[in-house]
Length: 235
Image 1 (spheres, rainbow, N blue to C red):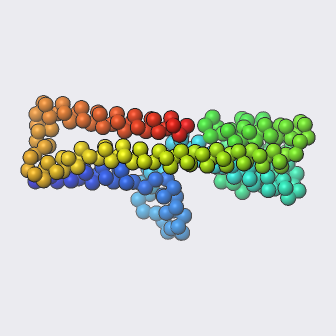
Image 2: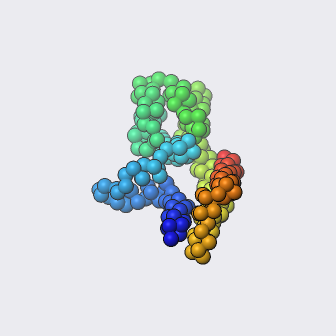
Image 3: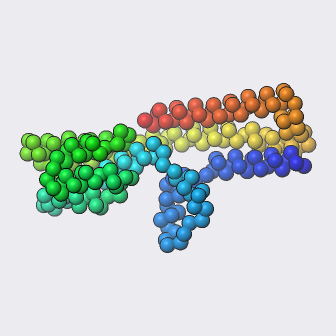
């Protein structure tokens, strides 16, 4: 009876980890909750904790929105410095303090291109670096800055659509890998239901401990290898 209970709890934990909500779903729930305070704040922070990949994607989205807003402000007839200041105020960036030198340079007539290059993060800052190149060309050569920014924004939107398409294609293999990782727990539950006492064998004997260690190691390695291949394909 105890073995069946432990197996059931292990299966429930594995299923919960497999079906845990992703970052977009969590953000949508927070937006639709209105002014209500979310429950399980620590769990929400854990699910939405910043990772290098999430930060890079946030910066790419912010760069695309910044180019769109800047192009609209320039098309409205505003000066480049004023347009950049207003565009940055309208865009939600992952690290607002990072772009303070850019805002100061745009407001005071400083070197905006150098400020953009220094503020661009190593991962996800491709859009800011391209915007810095456009600004340098527009200031040095006198080319139409609005047209250059619009072209950069179009390129960033195309790249973002491509990344989303690749992520959608990789969703199937990732789900299959998670399902295969859960199957051993389901096998333990079935064996416990048949009164075969699998936990007594796994925890009560040396061969069982060896099998348990090898199974967990192979399961973890399989998940790690699948995520690594998916991350390399998405990159």
